[in-house]
Image (tube, rainbow, N blue to C red; front, side):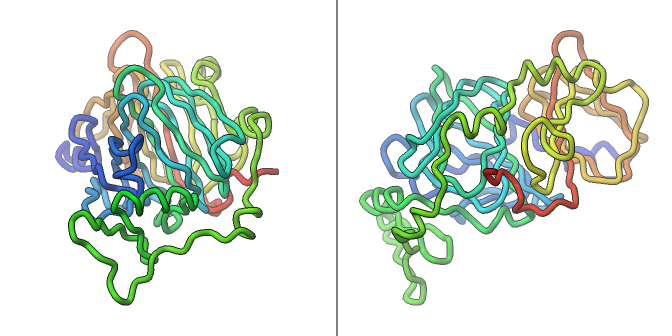
Length: 322
């Protein structure tokens, strides 16, 4: 593999292209400044303006959300996996029909395997623009987002209508629903009653892992975070490990699976027969199966990254409350 071929498989943080109209709450005050990034796969964006950096998916999608302080992502749920880790800043995640069933605050490097089928939202509670990275289960990321009814109603008051085809229409731009496309139906009262309302105590001990705990466990080998023998519940069609400076030796290795590398801190050197490159925090690299390569910190000081790999587990199995 040539350096140019490898570079085509890397999305650099500085090259990320945001979409500011990705979701139905794009005009709603308090949510109208967020940016959505689709890094690998199309994700769950509802906008035709969304740029996809790498179309080929390894059994899951990689995306990100960037938000200024006090900006929030409105209540919604997915039917497959949604795993977040904090790249920068300080974030509050909350869940429940009205967002008040439970909450947790996450710092840089913390990871959250959000249970499927519960309403969730998140907001930047730090002082600067910040970003969270996301792994979404399945090649098609579960076919979209299910919004809390009040989110759809608020969006309509600000000119955005979601069609049953999963696409947004901006009436402020003169867009209208096609004649054969009805608006997205609101969840019924019976459907809403069937959605779990777990407490903080139900969720945090089993679905949240703190960065510094993982770093300590990654001293001599990769720390398994999600997947078989992982610290967090469920096997969502991919597994996640945290690697620190002492996790791997300098020898090349080969995997039979896709390997997605996402640095959190420090700089990492990837070398293979044909070249080498350095990965920095916020970069995302898709290493193909069968490629012999080495992975080591490129400089002294703290270094960590999340490694995501595909598995044969069903993509919809993640996060089910037990």
